[in-house]
Every structure is written in structure tokens, then in C-alpha cells.
Image (cartoon, rainbow, N blue to C red; front, side, top):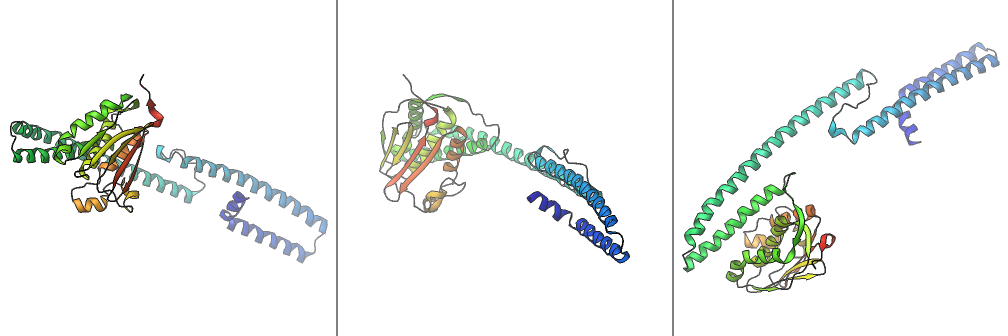
Length: 328
């Protein structure tokens, strides 16, 4: 019924003209007072012919409509499947569509090329900046003074920001180098802890590392990046408190006794660039770390959830249930 209504709406003027013709036909027959049998015979023939033409036209219209709807689902592949135009006006519309489609492809190609150039530039920059960072590390190896430790701590932050830039650039690509394999959780967590040990010491944060068991089907590099980011945030916002790492079933949890996250900020902490109240106070937050963690977890098939209470601390839960493997 809906299709018949749509067809009638599209053919409104034709139907209106047809009705006017039938009325004129009836008036002429009435004025000439023709034989009723002849009039009915002509009317039946006219009705049959009209309905036949209407049925054929409706069938052609319905086939064209279905073709266009099928084309909507694969329009990104091209417009070659468009039906033959039903007149000059429809042909002009199809030419307009093809012109707009070609222009869009050109714009997308140019935008993709610009994005690739930008990614290549920043990737090259991030790799090149690692050379002077490594050189400064060598210079600071034998400097045990307070100033040397201060410089080393700031250099560590610079190194983490550079690493975050690289991971951000890599995570946005469609050809990200994910290598799914069985990853033991305990060595991965301990490696992240060792990396951030100087930050724990400097911030006077106590680490409570519970036994971690099992393995997970994941990408070791990217899952390690997620754990490192979560540890970095925990230490960053916990001064003189405790960071606890433990398991609950297949979930890996990281708890801290830091400043916590405001309730109004929690729904938006995974948004790109969102820093919240803590970021505005600290003025050093980029709003990229948790966004990257969520992005990576989504791609790896893991889940990440955060609960927090201001003044009492934050808990981050990594759910690895789908891919957990027990190590015998």
C-alpha cells in the first residue's frame, strides 16, 4: 500500500490528466445521448487498457526503485549500476550525481594524500627526536646530583610524550601492525612496572603488585602500551599513596589512592582531547592517553572501564575474558 501511494504521488499529474480525460469522455457521451450499451463497452475497453498500461508502468517503476535502493548499499563502489534514465530530466540528474561523485573522490584522494604526508612527517620527527633523547640519557648516566635526577625525570616525561605521539599516529592507520598471539600477563605487567619504577620512587608511591596468572590472546606491544598508560596515569595523580595491581577472574585491575576523577568527568574521559577538571588543574594533561587506551582495547576485543571517587582514588578494569587462556 505504501508503494502504491508513493507511485500515485509521483504520477499525480498523469493520473489527474487521465481523470480529466475520463470526465470529458463521459460528458461528451452524455450530450450526444449515445446508446448505453455502446458507452459501457467503450468504457470497459478503456478501463482495461488504462489498467494494463498502469500495471506495466508500475512494474517498471518498482524495478527502478529496487535498483536504486540496492545501489544505496554499494554506492561507495561507484555509480555504474544506475538504471537507464527515464527521460531527459532524470538523465540530467544522473549526470549531476556522477559529477558530484567524481568530485568527492578527488577531494577524498587529496585529503588522504595530505593526511599521509602529515603522518609521515610527524612519524619521522618522532623517530629523529629519539636520537638527542638517547644522547642526553648517556650524558646523565654518571650524574647522580639532584639536578641530574630532575633532568632525568623531565626527560622521561618527554620520552613518554614522544612515544604517545607515535602510538597515536599508528593507531589511526588502517594497517596497524597488530600481531595477535598468546601473551603471558605477568611478564607484561612487570615490564611496565620496571619502566615506571623511577616515577614510583620519585613520586613516593607504594606499589602493591599481586600475583598475576594466565595469558591472553592479544598483541603484546599494544596491550603493553595500554598497561603503561594506565600505570602512568595512576602514578601521575597519586602523590605519596598506593597503586595496586591485581586480578579478579579474567579482569586485570589497577587501583590507586590518588585524587580521583569528578563524577561529571567520568562519562567523557575516553573522548579525544578531553582533560577534565584534573587536566585543567594539572595543565600537563593531553587528553590523549585514555582515548588511545580505549581505541586500542576496542580493536583488540578487550573492554576498559573506569570507576572513581574524588579524594579516594580510581580503579581501572581491563576485561580480557574472551581471550583469557590458563597457563598450566
